[in-house]
Image (cartoon, rainbow, N blue to C red; front, side, top):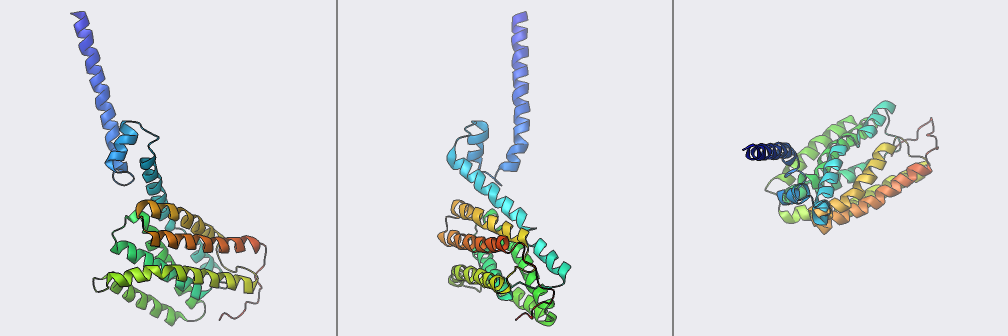
Length: 266
């Protein structure tokens, strides 16, 4: 009888351990599924403990990178905004470059929303767009063109609402995304030309530039993994090359001093 009792006690203890493991597993599952992993991959990695399952690891890496980029994008351009506000000047920033970047971000955001891509694959475009339109306004404001800045904000809001409405054909949205490559290329080359002409990078924020460079590199992988869209991936390849050029200029002109007497901006 003692052996039977001991066996029942052991079985009960094992059952309790299983229940505890299940209770601990449930919160983890709620966090990871479906935000970072589909349920089949969760089972593969955390139930079967097949930690070398490459397809699921790629999904986990891509989702993690994507959400990290989206979270980081909340702060990416704030150093640039604060640098302009602190200096009360937009010296060294090309307005044309900033506006072309705004066009590219808008195209990516609208194209992704229209195609129902996962938020983790494009979410930073939303936050970068808000920060970029703020920089556009500040550049105009510190050039003494505040009224133009306000008009730009109003016009941009109206255009964005039209693009996101059912009135805009899908072909137009696709064309807008396709225009991102020349927009990014021309915009960054304009900024590079401004840096070269000035012999310094002015109020350009190093933190912002390097974060944009790292984010665009990571986006090449996540856009291939999560969307499979060659147009999206190609845009980020060009963006990485252009952001790398600006980053290289920042390093080259690191010790260059901005003249006290600022040149009249064109």
